[in-house]
View 1 (spheres, helix red, strand yellow):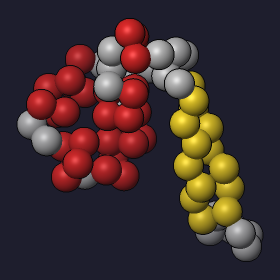
View 2 (cartoon, one colour):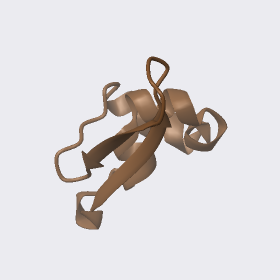
View 3 (cartoon, one colour):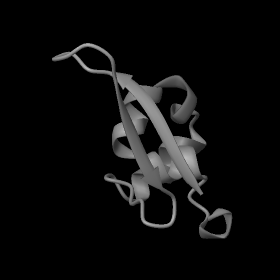
Length: 66
């Protein structure tokens, strides 16, 4: 699966498109991401979890979903 997000750039007008692929994405915080996701942090702290746990929170962390 391919996802994309539009985010506002603080240095220029308009939006920047950020793309990621579930098949190649890796969580920056490893096993902590699954624990945090089970605690509901994917929904409660979306910006932080987007940075550190993208695969777990947005791709489900399940390779079968890719």
